[in-house]
Length: 273
Image (cartoon, rainbow, N blue to C red; front, side, top):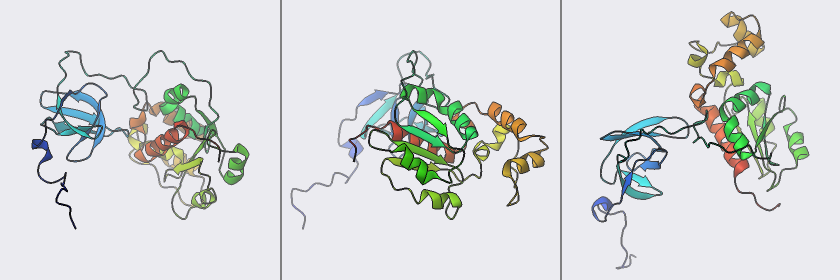
């Protein structure tokens, strides 16, 4: 039964039933497009449209209109900023808002583990500035065959969280079976589908059309070098490193995996359980 006092707040056009506040589209203001649900920070605002960028670097342009956006879940009408200053927020390589003059924090007990030195180098290249501000250290494991034992040795807790980035984390893989052995609530394991972290760099950034297909059973890095005519894997690695300047040079699967780990190890800590 429905009470006669029940009112369906979704019925009708809510945009016409209330006074909608007007908000200037200032740089880095986080808003949500009311129609599509796309959420991102303001990158630029023209006379009739605003450009938003989400945390994965995806950008979309939306027309300015009455009650077209949400801020903190509430409908607003965005307007172009009255200031004549250009909308040019300063950002780190990861796309985060740059914080000037803030020294690196003393390292926290929480950590992020990655499989190897190349993984660690790419994470440092894109997220290094953010991690130093947060006081989070990234450590290479040189493989995850004994991941459950490494986690037990780390002794994760509410005050000592652990995030682990795993290569080739796909159903049925050796990596997925190893990860399935871990069940600590203080450990978050994320991964990407690529055979090696090299593959998480967009081919266009490296100057190739696609990453070569390497026959199963052959060393993947060496197979890539052979297919591309590169003499040595270290030479190829240096080429890859020089090609990565920001999050835009990495595949979204890696971006999402690393962002979730950072959120996990920097979230408010709780008492041991």
